[in-house]
Length: 182
Image 1 (tube, one colour):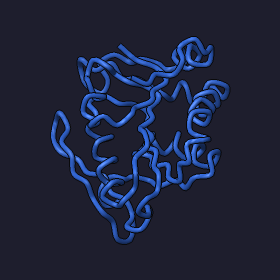
Image 2: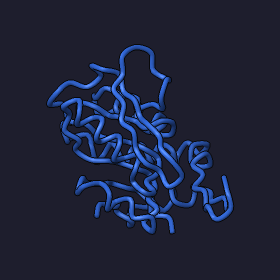
Image 3: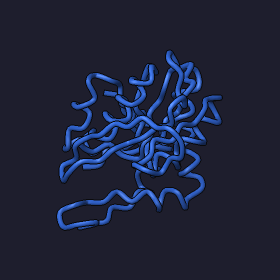
Image 4: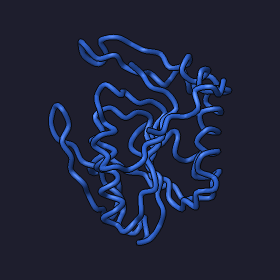
């Protein structure tokens, strides 16, 4: 299990900036709202810095961000570690030729797409999103990258909902998170 060092005061600060909204978007859901983290420049910077510190010496050439919140955290990490950013998008959002990966959600099916040629065989990739719940989206992202020939080094999320056991679906792939939400 790879959770950021809880003794780091930045982690506590990040955790306090994530607002929990009960019953959103539907009853029984405790929504982890990162917008309150993003509007706090220090906490947002600390979030990015913790990821940069972990990945700057891991020889990663691709940071793949999952739509939409992976687009917030992925690009600054990619720039800082000298990697390219590859957006993994919902269907029909990318122009040009794409490869797709369909996956099952608790409430139906969804799909991620990536441009053909965005990733070269042998590249080392990091998958970034804001939150891991059941792990379905992260699995689809890893499958997409691996089908293109990339080696997925790790998945990185700001928040994990451990009760939903998403980590167990990742086929042993390392998952790095900053905070756990219960």
